Image (tube, rainbow, N blue to C red):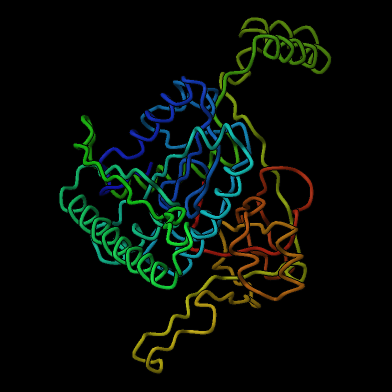
Length: 406
């Protein structure tokens, strides 16, 4: 099921509702979020896919200010590097195609996942021609058989006309091939049977009204929402400490006050609450760590698009080079401060070192993300904020235009 429509029409809310219904029925559907501006599974600037269970669909996760769904499994995340899908259409199409192949492999090896299906949340860029073409590519790459158009009559008409016309053309081609097979057949039975090609069935396009209660979000709210999503990645949700942990912390604080300041300090502490007043009522779920890595140990890449127009190519010729290129960043400058960097997976780096193909990096799932806290030009040190302790899985980092400053 693919959900499409303009911005602020209720696509994400409808996706949560469908996922909640499916999980309550004992299913484990896949959530595929290809909206790089407000991704529900990862940080902004990514497209991701993850199975959803009933444990993920809680009341807290469906709050009005939260756009994230925390799954029980690590999602497959591809780094796009921008909140606008029209900035690099070639990269977006390539990643959608790769995501569709990965999902097909997952569904083929899992009977429960294949029976549960998947739900696709798309971007709201459908008004211009580029966004419409990317939506069509997403429907074909993911091989969706149901398309729900929310609050956009013109888009519903365009999609219905497009898939109806395409299905008629395929039927005509199939009839011609069947006739040619009958002509070449000498009359021996069974030679002219035509089979439908896998994945070529016309999807069912359904029009839905705009969800009730939906309000338009301004630029400031969207920016704050993206900042909260990134902060949640590094710090987790805000939780309340358990009663036992609070009691142990109170005893520790009281013991320390007795040993350091004597009976008078202990009396003052007991008069003000015995140390419990200094215990925070809420804490973050995770504790990020700071890393300092020399410039020489890092390899930074920036994704660029090198697409040639048809007028620049010979007649009936196609571009032979990859339209998506990796631009190495040799000079690290202070402009990189507050940037979000994607950490390439070690297996992808190994394949890239052997083949030298850029697609081995940008079409592979990333290992995680780091935030640039400081760029020390005097010591040639890059200070990074990592969600976990220890060294990075790899020192190959992908740069985009996503920034975050807490």
